[in-house]
Image (cartoon, rainbow, N blue to C red; front, side, top):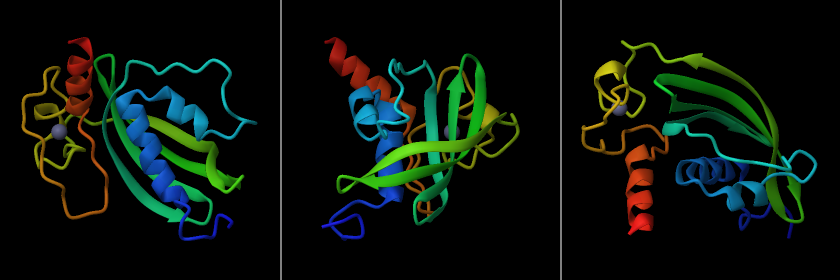
Length: 155
Ligand SMILES: [Zn+2]
């Protein structure tokens, strides 16, 4: 069995699961799916609140995506083309070319709510309900879920 097998998740699926791991703070999973040559020795997740992921294109061993996050008081948009390699019958994240730009306050919110960003996830305190899955293929994991899990963990 090699990475062409239908039993092995393709890089796009790995990208999604790694994004979920960022949202949920699952450092073990991130390290496990990182290529040993590029895996950081001392990796800690920052305090970013992740708002959503949109995969723009996936082809062979690369995945081009947008991921929005809040850091400090600012909304930022990460655009990256990630590279993956197949190793020991699993795809692993190697590295990527990325740019990070501020999210415009009047832009449509990244979560798909149809609201302006400043009235939605751009607020310091999010109060809108989690929007239903929209029609594109984006995986959206609202940061609220993470808070929920943190609440559960502290009980
Ligand atoms: Zn929103």
